[in-house]
Image 1 (spheres, rainbow, N blue to C red):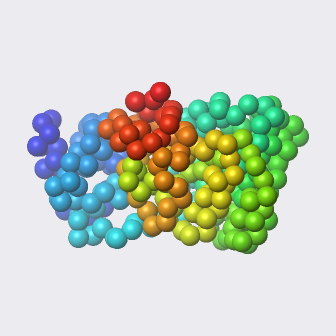
Image 2 (tube, one colour; image 1 turned 90 degrees about the vertical axis):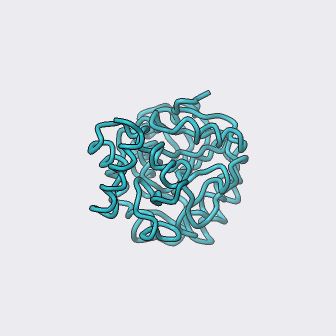
Length: 261
């Protein structure tokens, strides 16, 4: 199928359904998600649609900042990609090292991957991640105090940030809503961004976990500038041009994408 025909089909599908995911476009067109992602980028540049988290909408339907899906919904999305990211990220951390994990579906996948490994010191605000890791008695697991939220089972607030500020760790691994070259790592909610920012500020190595659907996307609140990220861990669907732009903006190392180094 020629590019012009794919673009026409994408716009026809949007006119009918008003919002579709990258996966739906790929299935309907019989092409890869990476091909669809490139098409969506080109169509957005020409003003014919607007990309949102995981897909696209007609330009008039795009919110100023698309909200993040609910936590329970996110845990069921892109599971293979998250497990791949988790395996790559887990390989960075050596026995005996200390790390921060923030609360999210990708960092929960990382907790699953770290659980059977040799003893680590893990500090997290995620109840789910702490529960998974504490099943291995070789790990030293610390659950940060703070205010308990309803959507994401995690602690947030001044107490959480204060506890983070008293610590220094080897790694901080966070999973933002979006990550692009201009805005850096971003979250939709203030409390999540504040905790992730605090964790990154107290770590020797700062790691962003972001599947391909989050790359090139922005949200409401910056966690950190692009140049402050030591390692980006993503999946094989990541667009090579987006990865190149992130590397040019200062990301020091990329794992998991087509341009991995």
